[in-house]
Image (cartoon, rainbow, N blue to C red; front, side, top):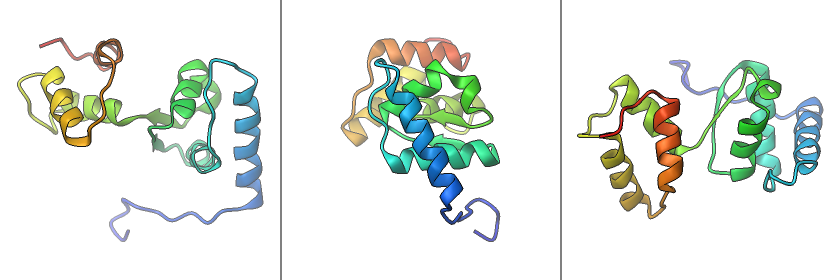
Length: 129
């Protein structure tokens, strides 16, 4: 925490209200899966401070895909996008992005669709291996 990598933000009524508004707005779109209150609070805080939200909650990820500009300056990533960011930045080394993803999938017992892997690779400018 002292190095500035982690900050604890207390909850507030305003933050909770903003999170609730986010949930209610998302429920209006049938293409957005359910968003849980803790994830909504993270998004509300990220909007205030310009942070990245790392979540596997499909509702939050989909809401970001649908209305990115309304959540700015927050950025929402799932673990696949975090892997892509690290790979593109040279933080992790692998023979290819797909190989990196495959190793991650085996480790955590979670599979991403090949279509999503290809879409994220394009999004981050990663050439297919």
